[in-house]
Amino acid sequence: MDEDSPCGMIRRIIVGDIATNCWIYGTGEACAVIDPGAEADKIIAALTRLNMRPLYILLTHGHFDHIAALPALAGRYGKTAGAEADGAETGGAPVIAVHRLDAGYFGPASLEVHRRSFAAAAGNAAYVDALWDGMPKPDRLLEDGDEIGPFTVLSLPGHTRGSAAFYDKSAGVLFSGDTLFRDGYGRTDLPGGNSGSIRQSLRKLLAMDKNIRVYPGHGPETTIGREISLLQDMP
Image 1 (spheres, rainbow, N blue to C red):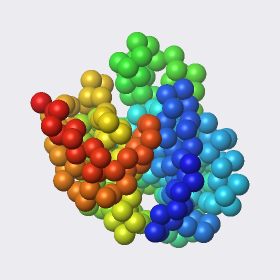
Image 2 (spheres, rainbow, N blue to C red; image 1 turned 30 degrees about the vertical axis):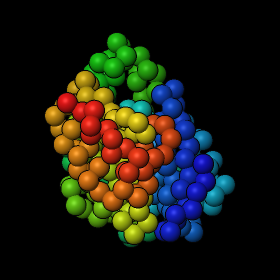
Image 3 (cartoon, rainbow, N blue to C red; image 1 turned 135 degrees about the vertical axis):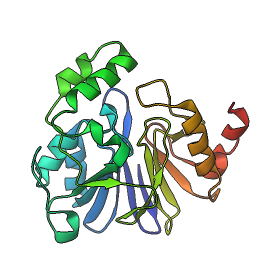
Image 4 (cartoon, helix red, strand yellow; image 1 turned 120 degrees about the vertical axis):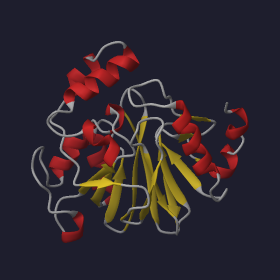
């Protein structure tokens, strides 16, 4: 999907066995890559065709199906696992950013975190073991209300403790990860999930401007207004 927003181009690349949405959002040659979940070659090929380079690699949360392509993508654009990036603001490697509470999914000790999480979802960790590559540490650990690139960070615990959305207010565009989908919301039965927290996070999102366009971690795009009825069905 290619789409123009008031502040940039939006491109969806569906990656991996779980059909994760990796989003490219940017203007001119600069962009943010949001949730590079798998198939790094596919994401890099799209960036090359678009003649774009990521200034930011943003993760809505730390689950493996949203970050598996991060090592290859970061390496391609100037950062390897264990290395410190210069930061996009200074013209170096892209800034990798995630909410502070999901930092444990990254860095040299993160393999066991992902193995436990994926085993809870699928019964075993074979998928993670087959695809594992050294996972870089984030360059920025985010908090609610932080600004990064064109985005304001919205903390949305529930799917994971550190789930977050990236909201470009000027464009009316929000990347919601696995907190809000079209006609649904993220599961809370994996490590770090909490059903009470995701209810509060959904209330926070669905109180926003109904015209905001929402680009989720899986499935088609939606709007805040279209999903308001979800609140009626929540316990």
